[in-house]
Amino acid sequence: MKSSSVVSAGLTTGESPFIEQAKRAGQLYIEQPYELYSPENHETWRKLYARLLPRWDRYANEHFLTGIHSLCLNPDRIPRLEDVNRFLKPLTGFQTKAVSGYVPAFVFFDCLRNRAFPTTVTIRRSKKLDYLPEPDIFHDVAGHVPMHTDKQFAEALVRFGECAHTAAEMAAGIRGPDTRVHYLTSVIKAMARFFWFTIEFGLMRGRQASGPGALKVYGSGLLSSYGEIEHAIEAPEVQRYPIQLEWAINQGFEINHYQPLLFIVDSFDHLFSLVDQLEDWMKAGKLSNVAPGEPEVNEEDLKSFLHAEIG
Ligand SMILES: [Fe+2]
Image 1 (cartoon, rainbow, N blue to C red):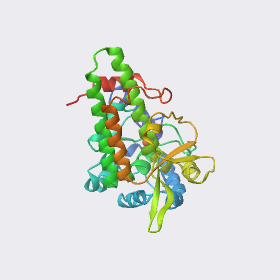
Image 2 (tube, rainbow, N blue to C red):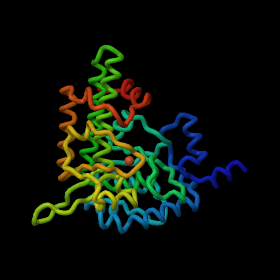
Image 3 (cartoon, rainbow, N blue to C red):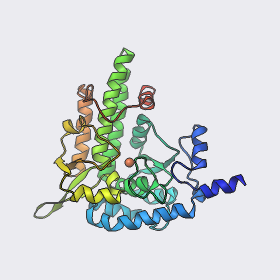
Image 4 (cartoon, helix red, strand yellow):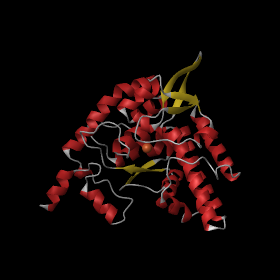
């Protein structure tokens, strides 16, 4: 009887006994228990994919459109991560890696450095198709992973992961524990803001032979949101500016509503150069006192940097 209740509960976000059990057992990395997805879970995937398809055609950047094609995702069924990896790995070396839930900051960035992407296996409830603050497999696999098929984008992500190592090394060289925590809190905030305004909510100027083209979306938070992908490009009240690193790392953000401010990059080479600059600034001490405000840095994130295995 117990196993049938586990099966019927499926792998719905926040309601999955399998995931709760893994968390209680302290297992971060898990296998994707594919047989546990309920018909309702697959139906949620189908609806999300069908709604977004025409908006991707209209608003997504060309690298995403190529990527989603290369992954051969099934519009009707939640993908098996091993199938996704079979298509993804030969392209850039990236792979999805199933996780049970929250991944502390250093661990997450270190995975990127190793071309692994911590991937949520649960899916939102069918009655809650719109934006939700926590990731699910639709956000992670349909929103993030197609970007990982692009070589330049993948290199920028790996480079970003390397910055976390630099931060941990620098923190290890700081003597007083309080000063070390203050330093890390600021650096993690800066990195989280950079990630948010680029990888999650970035816009890119398309190119045309005649000059700059239309604005397109490359941030995964936008690519996986039916409402916000259109809002990001069309709404007159959204502020859209060419990215300035000094602004992005000092700018707080809130996760529970559409973003009022978005930053534009020219290309993924441009993104890569920004990550380089981020590391240069880190080394020069410029990230040690960024503006206070969102996001909060939690204990787990701090610990993950303090106990990082570096070198
Ligand atoms: Fe995300």
